[in-house]
Length: 123
Image 1 (tube, one colour):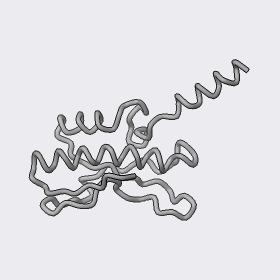
Image 2 (cartoon, one colour; image 1 turned 120 degrees about the vertical axis):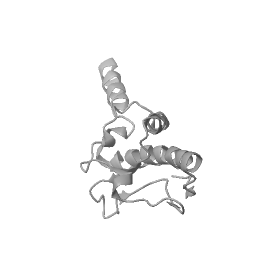
Image 3 (spheres, helix red, strand yellow; image 1 turned 45 degrees about the horizontal axis):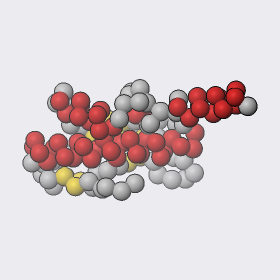
Image 4 (cartoon, helix red, strand yellow; image 1 turned 90 degrees about the horizontal axis):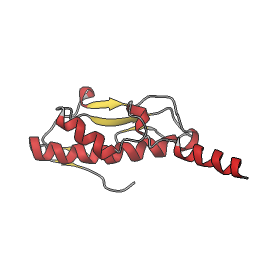
């Protein structure tokens, strides 16, 4: 019984938070990652680019509705890896991480560059 509980605990704690799709270690919080990126001058959004899952579109930039005073092009996004790492939870984890990260980038762009970006605040 104890072994079974240890296996379940190890599986639950080693899953990561979705940041692995952009090279983070799975423990770094998205807002911390965004803050560090902005400090380094990187205002790129995270783009989820997983293979289609159950016929659902999986290529989009969560948390971003658009910017009226800032042109977003291919150089302004960081694409995720294509391969799912968390089976059926891959899209959910990647989307949550990217949405939280992108919302921080929206705030930074509006503050630092008057980009007039809009974010979506729900999952």
